[in-house]
Length: 165
Image: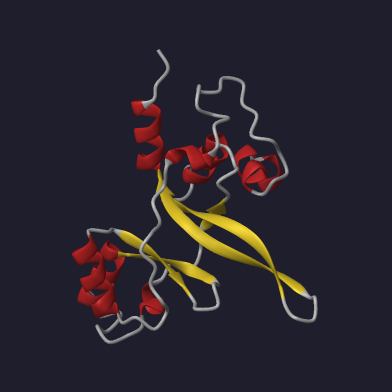
């Protein structure tokens, strides 16, 4: 069950990411990965245009974010191409038809250990920064900004490049 699964407990903030034999990088913050800002697609972008943009920019994946800032999910080049080729979607369909809407979010202040736990079940995590924004009447809401997308390869590359002697 989920409540005895350490990865689920860590992912959902019920357990610190304590581990008996932690790698040297376990407590380093996600922000140390030096993630670059991702290409972002709006939900009305067509599948054909998404394929063209991802190929032109040399990207495998991109977050789909509404103009309001709401993160809708992630689109991958391979899934978009295969969905079109299989006839499940048309080139003219909006990219939201091939968007993965289940994804993990992580803060730049979270540890690489927590990221590692997320990446055990997910192919990627979206790095988000949360800000509080206020309206003219004083009410507030939290807005998330996508800072980047990280994969297991990003974590592996960081650990391998910076391995302690």
